[in-house]
Length: 305
Image (cartoon, rainbow, N blue to C red; front, side, top):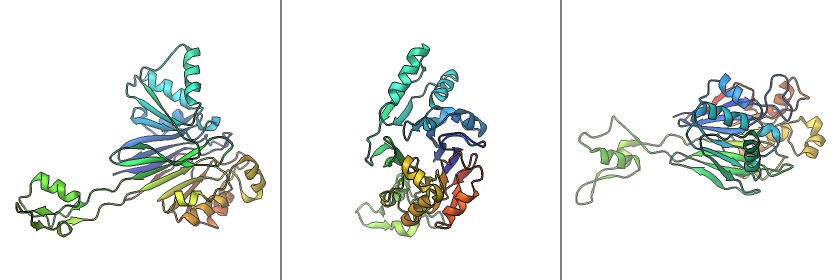
């Protein structure tokens, strides 16, 4: 089953050099999640052939404009395209007031329900969960309440080894095998041991999205050993003082978190408009953590099982 991350926007506060503000589309087992929604996000979704109606959950890290100003345009496009499904929005306090003010003064409202989920500042907690995955917040260190998001697949069922599967088992018995149970006789004795006719579950994958944040060692434990970590890298080390002043991170600091957390791959983004050429940021990060990639518009990263 799929687990993909598509980069829609990688720029910092200012769009520059063809880079859009922050937005990513995360697809997990045919479920589509939008993470941040900077200006122009709906155009990027259309550009990369995303189906807007399949997005039912939108996660906004914080209420700086480059992370949410594309949201109202997207909502109205969904409305004009006759959306009827509920839309869940996850954000810190204030987004509801922003949206209702826009609706009030434009004398319009969508034909679908918008369900707001308010995040708790400074705490890690599960905000979405179903049978396949969970999404929890990651407390970030920024100028205002800000959270990242950790996507984790749940443990998957065991796989049937078709070459060893005995004939004549019922569908109920096969389903029970996938949960790890043995096949029993009527008297309760073991007829077939689970380990003899099943294979280990496929890998459960994980993705951590850390948007605007100052360097914070506390992230290491939260994102430890995730398959892919996105960590902002607004500045280079030569601008470290500026990063501290604005509560952002350098490429080297992002790489340090990735190294300490032993993640599989690091994506860096949220690049300052002062950098037209991003190669120096990439080199700075790779000097510390080799498996680093620029989170550039249009790139899709697939996590294998």
